[in-house]
Image: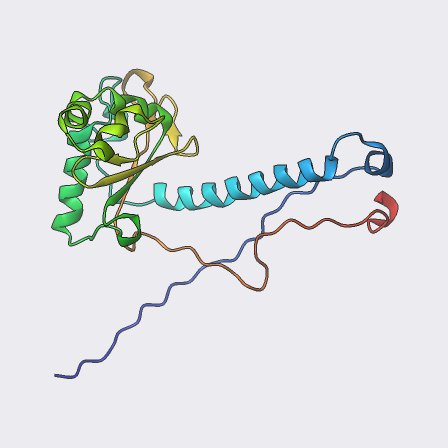
Length: 212
């Protein structure tokens, strides 16, 4: 039976972001350090951070939310309600019930994006550490000796970043609420614009006219 394909139009507004570093001809000619190299490195890091934060804000604005423990809202989350394997399993069940597939390029696992504070809580979860200790496979056991977990039991791959959103004083008794994202295949998309891609532009001395 032949069926017609359906299309959904998604409208977006293009915004431009950037930073500028001004320096004098004295710095350019007499600086002992590789000043332009350091400035380029700093701008590159700032550019990567900006792109990450823009994507994060879109994810945080999503409406598919699971609150920790027995909390029914952000304001009900208390200091003892921490990220653990049980919370991850609950999120995975929700994803699988909605036919969300794990991410193939991440070893066919669900991806967890979390804050270092939440990673700290996961590292104290005995349900995770006991599994690693009891496993005889060296590749699984070595997770206990790494700086941070990479692959968690039951099909999770985890990444940590200080860019993960923290709602300060938003919880019960002014507790900070840390956001963790659990992602499946096709969770979101990022478009690269070939006409004006993210890049660092260095203009030679004198090109800024009065400021050059």
